[in-house]
Amino acid sequence: YGRKRFIEVFSLASIGGVVGFYRAPGQTFVVFFFMQLLAGFVLVVVSNTYFGECFPTAVRATAQSVLKIILVVAGIISIALESILYEQVQSHWKLVSLFALTALPCPIILHFFLPETSSKDLDLISPETVVAHHRLGSVDLEDSDAQH
Image (cartoon, rainbow, N blue to C red; front, side, top):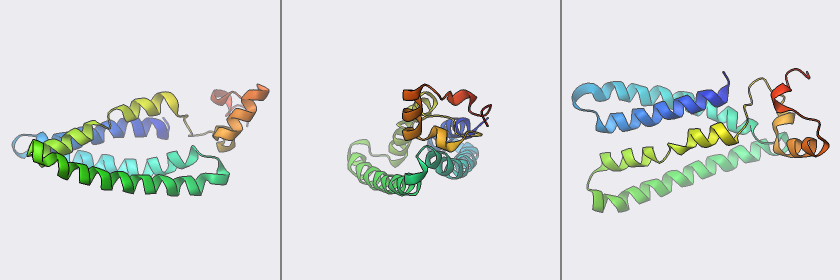
């Protein structure tokens, strides 16, 4: 299995951990605390590598910086939105759970629209190279390991 599969599985585990942590009865929240914590560690490490590999080498560092900026801005917006919505919902726990559920489409989008980068030549995966090779009809991403 590659990085893409790890991100798909641990994204779902993270969502389940967050929702479980805030919604679990009694002391069972402890299990979900560790579930979200461990899934979060995996996601930080693996997603940083994976999403960087999805960009061409020439712009990889810039793309990763832009992704970090988007992450920070999204965090700021979600905190502001949570404080606005709190007046209507009157529960931080419910709001955080609802926010976590908005991430459910992410593993599906990742699965169907982004390539697996593990054991692949990154120059063949980068979007500008894929477009150029598809025009020439010379690249099969699934068999790129056999070519090297």
